[in-house]
Length: 114
Length: 113
View 1 (tube, rainbow over the protein chains, first blue to last red):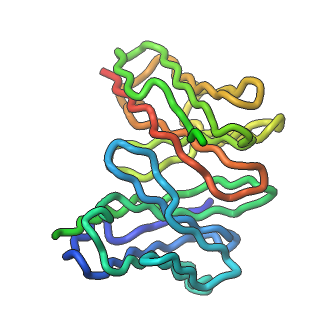
View 2: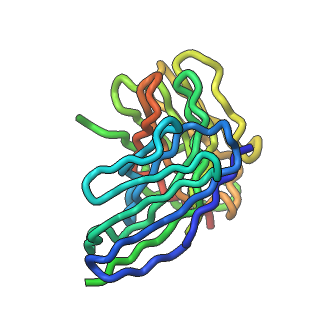
View 3: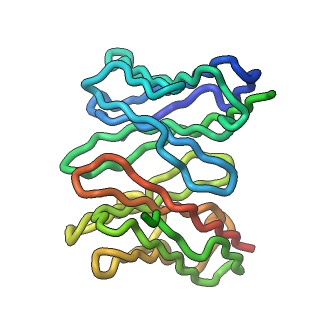
């Protein structure tokens, strides 16, 4: 089955710096890769996603890149702000007919220091 | 509109007791998922419901775990004879049929003493 590894487990940056989180997946048939942000005491919230027919996607300060050959994808946050502090999860899924069993990485705890 | 809601938000129980966790998906969402998040860990898939199709129960860790979805809407996850290792946050998510995006509820924090 699918396995997703995520690095680093913790990341500390200064406000205004960039943050990069990397994930690798094992199943080459996976075609959907979302990123979730989870704040303390809350459920995960989707922040960006990418499908296997796209190499890069941007949304304001957030971008995701996908390398299908190497089976890895990354989250890039630019101009970090204290409110970006949270746990970030990557996930991979083989979407079929709407069925979407997400396999999650272990998470990255991001701390942005003012 | 209203998001996914879960109840209770917190549950403390004694080892050996049964617990029921409830999930109300977003109105109109036909797909419903349950995940488990142990302390400091990622999310682990438990079970998936899609309309009237047979659920995918491949993630349930033991036969003490079961779930049902009545009327294609509300779902209940039941854990029988709880064990301390069942302590975790149980998250529910829903999505529109044919759409990949899953919307998560706030979770139920279960503590088994």
